Amino acid sequence: MQVLVTRPLGQQQALMDALHDAGYQPLHSPALHIEPLPVSDASRRVLMDLDLFHAVFFASSNAARLALAAMADIWPQWPVGVNWLAVGKATAAEITRWHLQPTVPDGGFNSEAVLSLACLQQLTEKKVLLCRGESGRELLAQTLAERGAEVVTLPFYRRLPNPAFHCPAQCDWIMVTSVESWQAISGKIPAGAGIVAAGERVAAHIRAQHTGPMRVAVSAHDEDMLAALTSV
Image 1 (tube, rainbow, N blue to C red):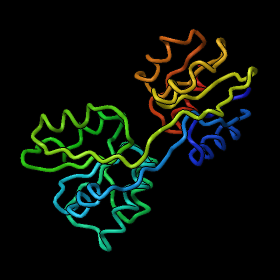
Image 2 (image 1 turned 180 degrees about the vertical axis):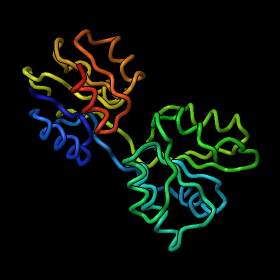
Image 3 (image 1 turned 90 degrees about the vertical axis):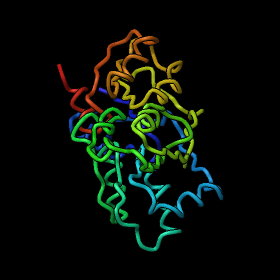
């Protein structure tokens, strides 16, 4: 059974290895290309005041990798008293590689789960930095501001549709981990192909355009995507 992984280049191997070990034939064609953005002078000025932030949130492993590289150029030693927040395990692993201790939601791995973290409940007169892509959901920023935080958002990359994306006609299942990934490939998927969607929010967008079989994973984590595929 052929399973197409659509993660960006460099982020696919662990899932492909897991699929292979489970007896599937994994294929890879990225739905999106990740393009780093230059760090502007305005962004550098924000990062120079990193010690003034109550919390720093990284929306993805790409955001953590690029943002922390920019921060490390300014801070030879990390500021103390900052809550380093990750949306999921891959992002937390990237933060850990920079010798920082991340805080991750117990479950959910989305904006709603992050908003349940204890350190984000009382935010009056506190600053929160959001490190993310050029586009994304605004729920987190809006809710933090409603809780009294001064929210600063910095983009570190943009996601671009991969013009070379290809889904073989004989592919049985396609793994889709974000709404933006689906939007980039929706017109290139065979009508009868099955989709493994990373969560109900992604699944809702796919159902509006695709009538083939679907299985919904608990999250975009490799183990959850594989579990959804193998469920009966």
